[in-house]
Length: 610
Image (cartoon, rainbow, N blue to C red; front, side, top):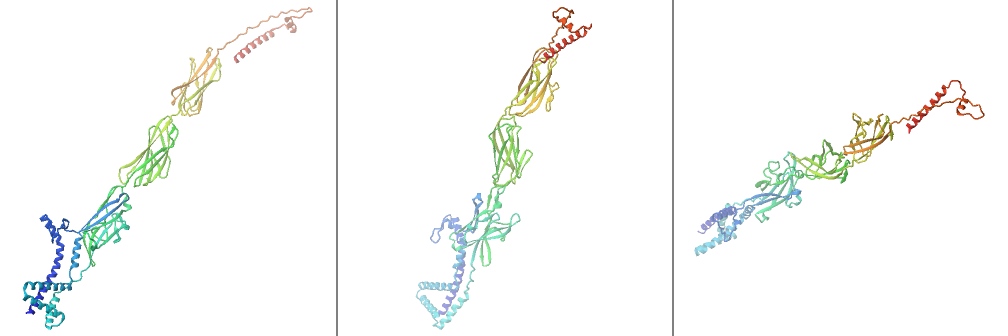
């Protein structure tokens, strides 16, 4: 009877061991579904469900879900530095699975657990079943002790029967392979990780890929072997500092750049660029992944600044003025084909640029071949104000060029103001005659001297000759470079520079009928610069009419007589005596007449010379 009961107990033990193994599996399933059931219950009831006498919070009712969240933000946008943040949540699902596997009892421990449970059950049955049942339990206990000590042969046989069924049902589980959880992220071709600031447990390796342009390049692969047992929270956060690569920092338009290298770009691992893997032995299984975040890179700055300066604040009209233009590329992109043009507040002003390397004049514009970011160039020009201009002169230089990568134009203006003082325009006229007195029929020569005594060149200088006396007209003598009118009474001079003088000659012949009077000659000179202002010069000559003085002829009567006395002879007598008569006195008369004529002619000549 005892033997049969003992066999029944053994059979019950085998069933209990089998159920115990099933309970371990049930524990694993329970741990994974517990939160989901509680969450569903909370939704249906709208209240917190008490669990084992404890109040469960709303957060505990949410079923954990394994997920990866990626985000990126600029930390120093000016220097293109940012942070990539990876947040792995729902780690409790991994922890529950691991803990359940660690709590799974081994084969020996299951036997001990069964024996202890059986003893407890036996004690409970003895208390409830009365003394008879208690006696049987004591006997069974004794048999077990005999089996352990080897004292009873019959008990040994029974124990053998007990041990054999246990060994047959005992199915020790194979050693569970250790699990690893690896978080991996591939930094994109546009960014470089700042590896010096990464945690020590992060491994950084380079991977060769083909970039967007089809070129060979390398990116960084970061791996983090998670230590689940040391993570106390349901989430894990990893921050990776990154910097935009220099070749992508400057762009003429704003662009979005992915921080993590996803498909379709080639890399050694297919799929998304950030993922969590479970590793068992050599087997890898991807649990969760997430697409890459992007960062917006604004368009690079473009700008030009120019400063215009003159070497003087005040100048004379017609005097050259030197200007300096400093132009700077204040943007981040290189500029090409920069064009410069000048405008002035006054007309008829010319500007001449000085030649520089890569700087030349194209028509009315000057062209600079290129200007790099931050580079400055100093350009020079000379301004030639018109002699007739005066007042405030505004000089404006316009700089323009095409925006890199776009059709629009960019540029700037620079201006400078100087004071232009007008030039003094004046001249002197001097007129002289070659004599002060003249007679009818004489020719008088006049010399006219025009001298520019001002600061401005005189143009279109017109000189006119005239006499205040009627019916008398002077004529200019021809001169090279001087234009005369048809009557030769006007002379046109193209220009006379400051300090220079020009001489003209004019002649007039006094008519025979001209009476004695003062002959007044006047010259009038005008120019473009002096406008209607006339400069006159006069010259006066006294003209005397011809006066002829007639000397009467002297007639002498010679008395011929002779005195014979002792007294002197009279003149006539002397003459007769001295010139003995030949009987012909014609020669004497002729000689006398000739002398009279000579006296008259000499007197007239002398008067004329006076």
